[in-house]
Amino acid sequence: MSETPIVYVTREIPEVGLERLRERYEVVVWDEKLPPEKSHIETRLAELDAEGLVCLLSDDIDADVLAASPDLEAVCTFSVGYDHIDLAAAAERGIAVGHTPGVLTETTADLAWALLMTCARRTVEGHDYVEAGEWGTWGPRLLTGPDVHGATLGVVGLGNIGTAVARRAAGFEMDVLYTARSRKPEREGELAEFGVDASYVERDDLLAESDFVSLHVPLTAETAGLIGEDELRRMPDEAVLVNTSRGEVVDTDALDSALDEGWITRAGLDVTDPEPLPADHPIMRHAPERLVVTPHVGSASIGTRNRMAEMIAENLTAGIDGEPLPNSALRDAGLE
Ligand code: NAP
Image 1 (spheres, helix red, strand yellow):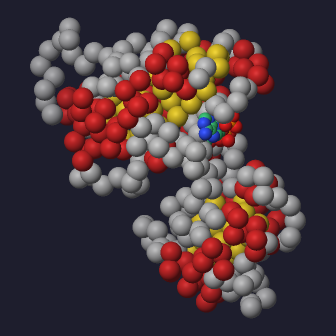
Image 2: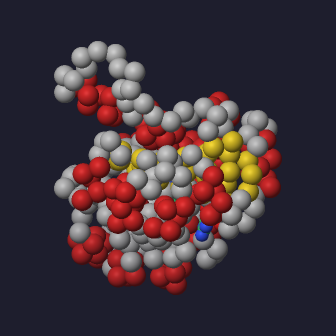
């Protein structure tokens, strides 16, 4: 083992985070555009006797990876979601796991709204139309879509991001419905301060009554496939579905059928299943008239990405020093 602890980083994170890490560690970065194979991460951790691992949500950090370096003390993911890390295996091995909650809440809520607005007002189609030279005259029927103001917003998962999305509805004078596993009186109170009267309803009622449904649940065994054929058929034909949570929360084949057969009008996805979504995936034939896809950029503001990089360094340092992590995924998942 080298005297300076070694940290392996599976992608180039913002420089501010790497600088912080380099102050204390020997930092080895995978600097390719595409992620390293899982086997490569395992090999590098073992070769380097790494004490720290910085990973992304696209890395599969399973029990084998966690066992690759006997000296591994801390794994920190550049994301709030940690469904790509085997937390139970980490807890068993005494490896600290950090994530970046809170900091990307508002930025991701902004993106959910960007997709909602894009789907409603068909801005991508509009751009393509102009670019294709089709803009011959002003058209009374050209690219019409549903009003956002005064409509009903349904938020599935009223956690940090769901609440931030609901808060923004105040400016559009929308009715807000939400669902979660339990009612959230504190969140309701928080929203009431912004003039948003959020009503807790059962999921089926939310789907049936919302013009816009925005998904904000974590990916768990319970939420995988949460929005499938039954749920999509329950939504009004004019409804718009926005997913900035995790791709697997929506059944892609069912969504494909929904867009084909007009069970809903449009979908805006920042996360997909599979992810990345190949350009020739069957569902892409709907784009952009019925489907708008962004490449998992929910947290992609410069300020937020820099702060996430700093949090990674703070979490990793605490983990390697054997101190409590400022943002522990194990704690947040109830495993600590
Ligand atoms: P959070 O604060 O933990 O909120 C999650 C919400 O989901 C809670 O209200 C929870 O309420 C609800 N929930 C959990 N399981 C449920 C179920 N089975 N049915 C219905 N509701 C359920 O999480 P967050 O910070 O808002 O983030 C949510 C997710 O967004 C993350 O896990 C991540 O996957 C994703 N995300 C994506 C991006 C992006 O770039 N697109 C960025 C950040 C985060 P209960 O406890 O009552 O169930």
